[in-house]
Image (cartoon, rainbow, N blue to C red; front, side):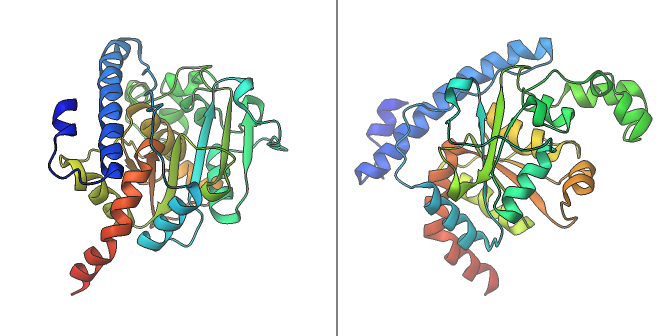
Length: 291
């Protein structure tokens, strides 16, 4: 595969070559993740996707944010999320959250108000969301299906509710010690996942940008429950793939997520390629669509 990349006829510049080599490493690590996930499935959790450590990032975060906003007609902030694995990773100059808040509230605060949030376990107000991110153990009322059956009435039986919970992509409990959520263009370091809230057309453009270089089909992982935390953060982080969520009642109730929008989560490893394609082609795509 590597030899095919190096000899590919369309590689006419060093930048294109670096993109392809980066994608090769991305695919190689994803293959390892798929094998690990198959083994982990028996134990009802997934191994985290290991993003490429040798990326050739030429765009900065502000440029990426600007390209997404302009090409997708998004007025709100694009949001970055970093999942810290140890205290040593956390910069000393990032202030901790002042009070507990739901993870969806953090995303919405960054999106709509430009706020930043560093939150350890005690500052995550929703333990369901925190468990999806690997900060705490999945609460018993969620794991058993009781919450979805007895309180939320989202399933016919508790067993169905338990199945919904068991099939959510979640990080290993304790694998994350803190989350850092901020507008992408104001982040103190590269994020693990990039999230935006937009309309179906904006999600379509992201899918088209992903398909542009490598083809295939896109598949999305959602249950209409735990949108920002599981669908838009844990799933892209673990699987290394873009995920589109239709929101959830919790994020609508607790953070004001609008009914008419979709939530898109993008692994940071994919951002530069996506932004390059959008910057080059979105105007032509829009012109064709509106002609």
